[in-house]
Amino acid sequence: MPSPSSDKLFEYLKMFNDVVVSDEEFAVRLPETEFELSFSHVGDISVDGAPFEMNVKERYETLKLR
Image (cartoon, rainbow, N blue to C red; front, side, top):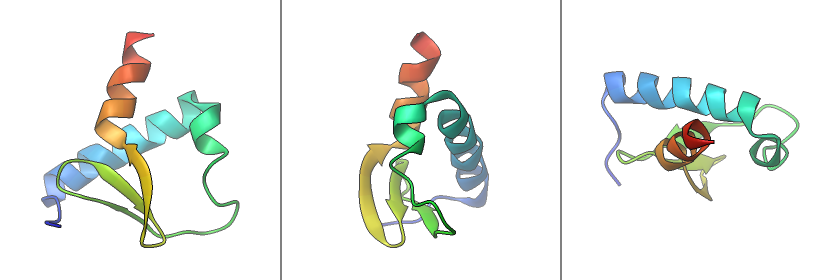
């Protein structure tokens, strides 16, 4: 799975922060302690190396439409 560019990674991190703040359902699925976060080139999220089964870009867009 290709990694995103630095600019795209920064964009995904900003989206991730907005989603965590805006979506309590999403936030409770995250580990309570420190974790490793990564994104695929299309925005799929992995937490501690395991797929999170969510795309940050799609979730961000869904929340913007509410």
